[in-house]
Image (tube, one colour):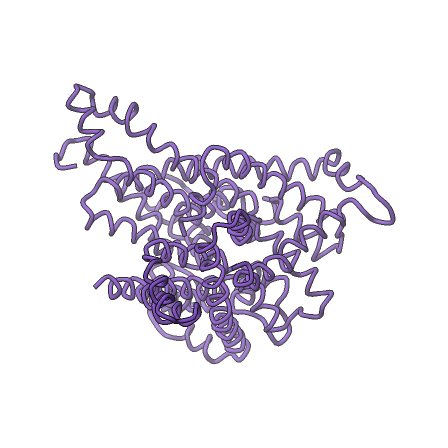
Length: 262
Length: 270
């Protein structure tokens, strides 16, 4: 790549074009959301905050936003410890069943999401969890587990297990030795795992379409139904906020990894 | 140790495995054992067309994603680390943006008065706006955009492991850059190609949001048949049989690919 031959320049231009294809659609929403008109013309004729006001001033959107945040936070708080415990078990056991266990925990990624949605809908309609916060949280925990397990397993693989053995041989029980020796050293991958679980829950749409409703509609479900009818610039404002949230969380994750490497 | 893993396992079992078993049961049993639901999938053209369309779109999307993803992954692996990291960041940022947000962005870009049509009109390439959205074209473009990172990341992780000395050796032995690429680099990146293609193809088979929002009611994919049978018609038998066929396709693909490369490798990306 050091020589600037004709071929390299053509290749470089191609890569730049593809990267623009990837990133520009995400960015184009931002100016749209500050538009002053109802119409989604680009560039907007004049700028205002009216669509952000429309979002914040509408109780239905605010309720949806609250539901999504509560669900995402609860999901993170449950999925992370469950996933950490499972990853620890898989990592520290040589039992033949562990390989299958791992695959089992990857299953939510393998099964088409629409099938998972229909299945969860069926189970919930039997046990009365439809349109409840608890139902949304449980479903998002299930969908978030593969990300948590993947991230934490990667962290455990980079950790020298003998340190925990030493702690235990010095008289600590297994739980304490994990909490005081292992956990601080895999902290950054646990943080990544938690962030993955949070973003997953915040962005999840399809299962929520089936199981959320009434008082407890998620933000993405409301967006989806609104999008079917019209492309209102309020959605652009919400999209910008969602993208900013994801971006900030990813930055936080990169930052926590940097800190850990020091 | 199994005890530690059991809460997580229980969640997946109750919310995913049990419903799938129940779907299977529904598909073959209503007032007695029946294969009627499967017979309908095989004989009624609407189901045939849906599966054919879904496979066709998935193949097109997978090939487009490979064509677009390979150069990007190559650049990320071959550039100096600082630049490579920037390329990767530009791939990962849209990856973690809501699928819904990205579908919405494409609706805006591709509509009749959207940026793409305006640009084409301005350049004088067309006289009147093309209908780019609410059809198969819009669905494919948005789906490629959403799934592209799933192609780039496994490709990148495979390419990163190819030692630079190998291509240098090929070149020093007199190979032209194209020859070295085709005989040395490309074969060594096959693992990544397979992982990326599997991931994109399987995800596309079950994709729901983009065909629903961008397909304009004409591009009916398998996932939409499932959801309509449940939501509109309450036809659980039909929905289950279609789901089971889709699941069988997905698991068959994973089974075959799993013989060639480890499945952990495919899912280690996100």
